[in-house]
Picture (cartoon, rainbow, N blue to C red):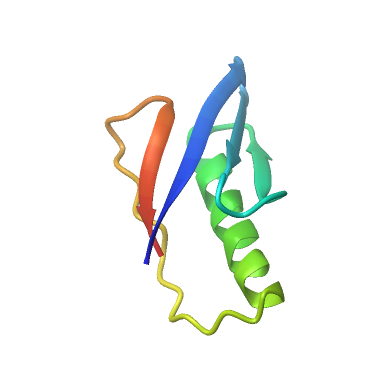
Length: 74
């Protein structure tokens, strides 16, 4: 399954991430990597709460993109 997540630097040392297809699925981290890890857990929690039975794999995010729209495989 592929979904879109958006990771953006708000200010130095503060990153936000969210998944537009899952309302309310957001995370904040002190680094891009931390924001990505937290949105992964948030997406898994959202899918579990929606009773979606999917094999959840680790998010794969292209490291060359600093900010913007990312396509993640879960």
